[in-house]
Amino acid sequence: MLKNSSSTKKKANNKEPEHPKPHILGVISNIASASVAFFGAQYIALFSVAIILSIVGNTKDQIVDIISKNVLVQLATSVLVAIIAIKILLKFINRQKSKPDELFMIKNKPTWNNVIDVILTYGLYFLTMIIVTIVLQIGTKVDVNQSQELGLARPNSFPSYIQLFLLVSIIPPIFEELLFRGYLFNNLSKNTTILASTIITSILFGAAHLEYDNLNYIAAIDTMIFSVFLIYISQKHKSIYSSMMMHAIKNSIAFYVLFVR
Image (cartoon, rainbow, N blue to C red; front, side, top):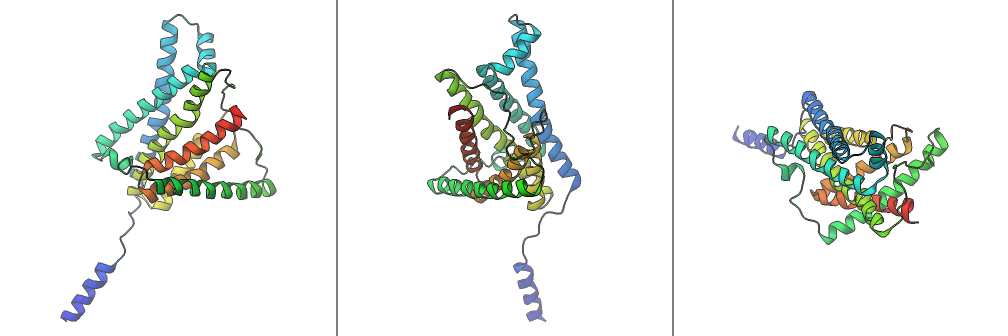
């Protein structure tokens, strides 16, 4: 009897850790809170900038023109969006009684091995995207040559290039990684499986880059696939800095192609 009992205990100890049971309300809450931070921050920031521009004497048409064409104002707005969104996320995290450094994965600083791993993973993503593009071109009606409309003019001075580089290659990787691969994915993985968390996070990330004015499907597909690799590298290193680096590489290449070359 003792033998049977100990073997039963051994089996129990050797059991693989269980995946979290899907918790639909938790998943909905995670998506809703991330959406509030993402969209709410943009509305608050744009409204605040518009109010300031109005106070200093600009008309409605001038405000629209400044926000859509002035790189420095766009950069300031982008920074404001990031700050407001992170403030909102911290409010949600405090209500959850979670630890921000764990959800945002900011404890583990990058190493040189991580940097090499990031570059190799980016190469794998790039090869994957080439294959996906060929398949889409042959088997679907998706316009794989549709260019991204960032709504940004080519800079005409060195300071403008620096401002635009910060706007395209630095701010989005920091803000979007903290929101999507940090807050959203890590919260979702507490309420459902890793696979489901990856799919949900990647679909939402792709949808955020759809460009609703001209429905850029190839950009949405690209960012969905890219999100999978970003999740992989951040979870492998347990560090948000890895996905930030990889995101910055992609955006820096886009910056070079669109504004420098």
